[in-house]
Length: 94
Image (cartoon, rainbow, N blue to C red; front, side, top):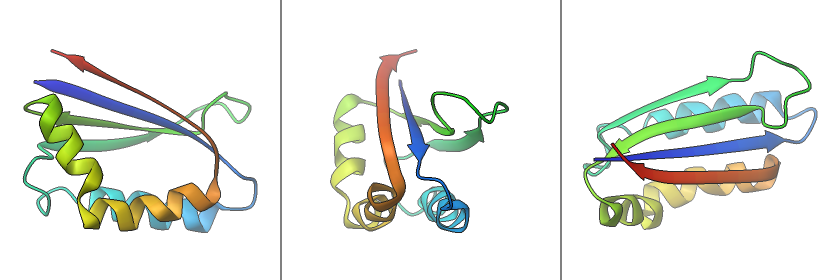
């Protein structure tokens, strides 16, 4: 199993778009078969280096890649790209 974690820092004043992005991202669960589990968590600190993170599970690294290029994910991801200032990610086996 692969744990795929992505963290984002967002532009100020984009809270409504962030919620739209989070909703769209979580909506992919059950739509993209490779995505086995997903949750989003927001930072408890206002001045954190990152504002939110996605924690998701996949069977293989290949499944992560399939998810990343799926048109449904690409569409949701495009909103994020327009409102974020930073992104970091990690994939690890568990």
